[in-house]
Length: 72
Image 1 (cartoon, one colour):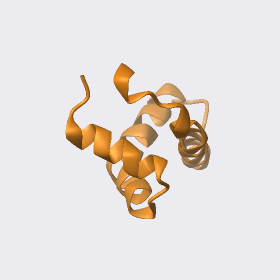
Image 2 (cartoon, helix red, strand yellow):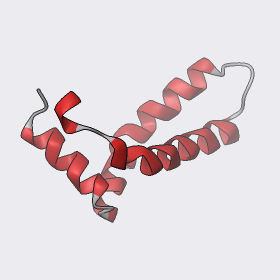
Image 3 (cartoon, helix red, strand yellow):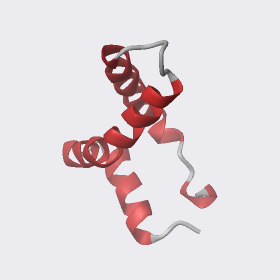
């Protein structure tokens, strides 16, 4: 069951609040870039990692409206 903090944050993202998207990028961007760099080690460079992380956030932005809070 999602908690109020998570549900509220997702609601802010769905409402396209710029501050929420900034918070998402600030908090999860480094984790995302780290994972992408690890997975692509030796095959992709830092610029590609940055591009992929931005593409991932763009995909999330396009899909956030389909999120069902009752499913977590």
